[in-house]
Length: 310
Image (cartoon, rainbow, N blue to C red; front, side, top):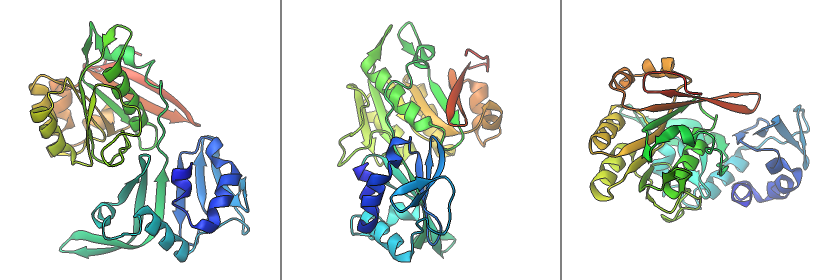
């Protein structure tokens, strides 16, 4: 709670502590200049009126102004916007605790590339949550005779891919019933999974896990295979051709992989550039598809041929 509260202007912090939003399964906070401060919780959208939460916004609800946003950007960047300029240029920051902040606003472009985003007018603060044990019902489908199946976790944004991946990494590293722990190498490009502070994980990711924090995925996967001899390679949000190339290299070196991707189902995955061939090659042996309806998360598990296992 304090990691999030410290991002807000001092005059607002006490109200956030009193309103009780952190006890409602807080998932994200939307901050928009001159618009209502909005909390997305397990109980739906909430707004701040005084030091209380309401489900319907009105003129008495809090709206952050330009000065509030300026202060928040200063706190996010630890009083040095310059030091975090590269991360902000990519549209996000990861802060202490692994919380990820999406950034939007006025773009200054140069030669067709984003040079900086300033002033910032919109923030999406995604709350990191460990939820230890959330993968326990999934994990038995991901191995056989102590051999881990290369696994891809799919869902739309915000459904819980990263949270599930973190717990799979923990179980794969520490071991589970019928599965002895493996050496896991985690490429944590956005510091969301391990939640490292100065390279030291703040989240529980297992005793046999090595972390490469803040490194681009493709380069990080290659580095880990060369230097850390992983049995399982873990990576969040697999992207374009460079990521796939590095992933193929790792798998051909004899290690297994577990990763995530934005996709609602296997049909949508097949239509993504480069993924049709991955499915045909059976690059992954297990696909875990997450869904969410009215705050309840469900999952289906498929094998490499698309056969439903659960």
